[in-house]
Image (cartoon, rainbow, N blue to C red; front, side, top):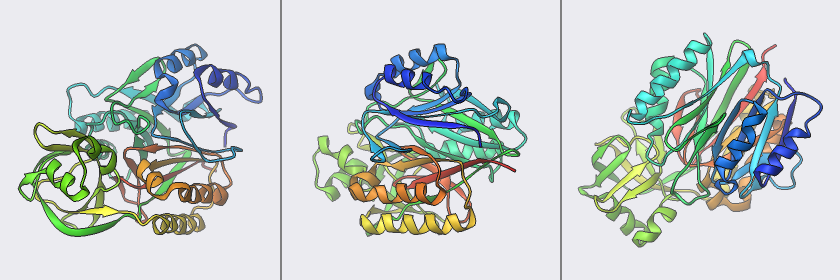
Length: 376
């Protein structure tokens, strides 16, 4: 595996200073997960003159296990710099503009497939109205249903106002930054674990378009959530993220969906991923220690089959931390201990990863762990 230096910083100046203190190797790739508190334009401007390719996004909290006392940080940037052979990866930032989320995914998948015959994607998505599931499906349509694909939706410290991705001298608030590896030479795989459970009676999505839900059981979606959670308008978004909808798909599989934006005028909720009209849904919740315990067991089982990794990336839903508190550190430290490798990540507004059957999907309230190493 290439040399790696991982650290945290609390300002753009501190980040650049620590980067310049890397003397044991010359970095060729940077991965940066940063709070919006660092002022992203300043951060990008400071990194630009260094001329290093960067995969970066804003967060709802940062995660780092690399000699740090605690794995969770706030209002910081966690950074991993490596000397990967530049022939083994590419980075690009994609603006969405007026196109659909699915079309954006298709464009990303097509680009990645042109870089390598066997691409493996790491992606971060900005924008509170992007449909993460549609982006995943677009990538799979262009690059293949079995393509390795991992990542998360950027955060903004839980404010739910605006999120960003960045690379080079570019910043986007509704696009995606993509890191693609040559999977013939770089092994990229991982596992996603949720543990949320359905509660209450099933309801019917009676009107929706993509990731926007207008009515549930014939009533405005905002009213259904407000009544169930017993909250006022100004409390709905912050509390609602902890109670996602559990969707039962026609094939019997289930997936969680959290809303990220509210349209009170229309009574609609904009979710992180698609919620098809006609879907049967229930509210869901976490039981804290049980959720974390399930993730720990699934990580241990995965390690017995895939025991080698040189770098770990972790995309974990902010709701896991809100519900489980300090217990959420157990799953993070378990991953670091099992693979004995540096671990960097962030708390997200949506996660992309592969379940135990190896199927890729877009999730909410989930932990998605990614293992990266050079193939022998």
